Image (tube, rainbow, N blue to C red):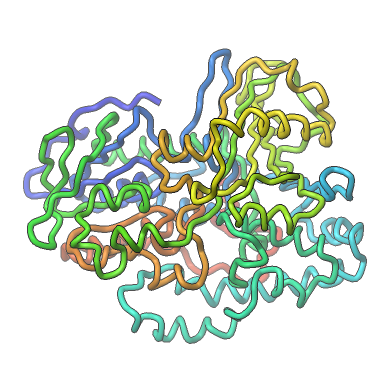
Length: 537
């Protein structure tokens, strides 16, 4: 997407507070929309020549299109509310299709059962019965309990945490009985499901956070619940189209988006951020919003002396990070009706696979995820062709893998394993290919340690223990993105943008947003929320 440089669409900027947003990823674009809608003068500075961050669209010769990172849209309610607060409609900007089945899970490295996960609860019970009929009878109890858990935690996930005292706030105390901090996601699921494969069906989603279900806190059973309760969506044109729509709305509201504009540092007077420096140019600001990857950007942009309270260089170096991913983007001749839109192939020994990743080793039998968007959206590839996206979870750069040496053989193994999905001759069909390793995530896409899901989401790095939305120890500097509260994942990042911009507006003495719709009645089930019905094309 070519976004012109230059001034905002209107010139009446005199007297308006100026906010500079570093990075045009999902959090930065949401912040730009919300701040421009409140009348601020907004300048977005993006280091790359395209918008979207890890949610950008990759375009390839011949008409192939790929999402770089996220490939589906979950819980669209939050972004619908943000669009509405900006006088726009997500439904009109980007039509979305709710998927059914949501995805296909293949167990046993390709030799085990195949489950088509569906939001139709009766059909889903029949799918679970393929694994264990007794587990099928507990699906509804799991959904009811996680509906209550989400409602209990929503107030916690919709506000910032400024100090340890926030951990004792009434909403947090009400949510605590649902937390069970001593349990992992897998251990929590044992309350409902006997078969380890059923538990994997409802816990592999911890990979959205780059974590193992055997270590991820039990709170995150709400991830799989969100899929069944509120849907898995495909935006027309891919997730990059959502970023494009956000940029259009921000610009209509007067925001300026400058591409190829890498910020070199945030400028401070004492502890107050007063602007940024870009190619030697000082850009003054009343507030700075940092959407860049925290582990990569904070040591470069924020002086260490201002981060010593909690996120000094040494602390960032010692923090715990998510896994990384090995990626293949393949423009392939042919269409594959045997493939679902989303397919997850789980290693035969999934627990060993995760242990190898955590130990920094190359997986002997990798699990992988395959995205085949032409199953729903033929526009993602030329007629008679497919745009396949292959993701393999691997260790971040804290491990000892030499990717320059390991990548060719690992690529060959990943392609070989596609035979388990009925594509034995993929190599001869490839017409375009791009590979991204953890080194590329770090060096090309500015992702600290190549950890594509940011800081790990263990209890010691959540809530008040995560970098604050209003960055502690400074004034006028705010964080958005997966490296701050509430965490990673598109809907959570959008929520974080609301939190951070509300704090910014409060600090400037301006009205906040009030963008949230009335609560959804319990038991929405497969019908989805009112907001979701409105955005489905």
